[in-house]
Amino acid sequence: MGRWKAFIPIILALVIATGGSLFVYRWLQNKTIPRQAVQVQADAVPIVVAAADLPNGTKLTKEMLREAPFLRESLPGGCQMDINALEGRVLILPLSQREPILESKLAPADVTVGGVSAVVKQGMRAIAVKGDKVIGISGFIQPGNRVDVLVTLQDPATKNEVTKLVLANVLVLATGTEIKEQQGGKPGPVDVYTLEVDPEQGEKLALAAAEGKLQFALRNMADMETVLTKGATITSTLASLRGENPKPKTSEPVKKWVPRERSVKVEVIKGDKVSNQTFSY
Image 1 (cartoon, rainbow, N blue to C red):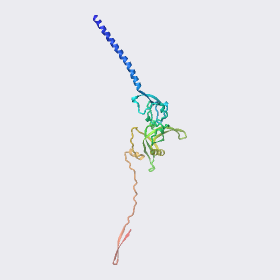
Image 2 (cartoon, rainbow, N blue to C red):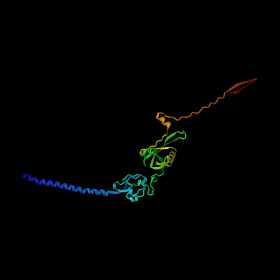
Image 3 (cartoon, rainbow, N blue to C red):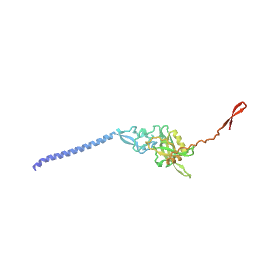
Image 4 (tube, one colour):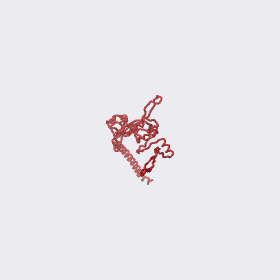
């Protein structure tokens, strides 16, 4: 028993030392974490972001914007910090919710009218064509997509219908619906697609829309290749399905019969004179 009494102070000292170490460790943790949080909070800077998804051509108002903290080291170039200064500016690119408002996504400050006119590139034109759910691939074509434009019309030289790719890799600026009078006099919705084209492409598109039937082909956004096609006719399409290689029929010139002129030479003797005469037949 006497030996155990000698160990009691040692055991008490170990318990007190362990308890004191745990207390100091927890106290230091509680003091360190708030300091780190305060340091992170001090490095955050409020910048302006979109409060909701915004399409291109939108004229900004204060209700469309809000502030969100960003780390000072991670601030994107051209970010905006004043909501009031952004009121009335026009977006030239779509924005997602909580996406920062950057100067590169805004039209120049002197552009005060929103809509399609604000997002058309310099030197390009916006032209609208009527369509339906088929031409728009059942609603899959959205603003920002790129499409190829095909037209089916009658070839004035052969009077045969031909389908030809007329425009490739065209940007879709907007899609919408307008009410038009349908057959029977009843109003009905008509899909309208606004495309960005250069002036020469605009002429081709207007002619194709007026003289034929249009069809869009949706492209992959990363596909920038231009493909030249010969066009498809009923004859060439059926021939290709049979594995044939149709060649255009050329009419052979008609050979006209021209009679050949024949002649005969006759020797004429008169006394001591001899002459030759030629007679044709």
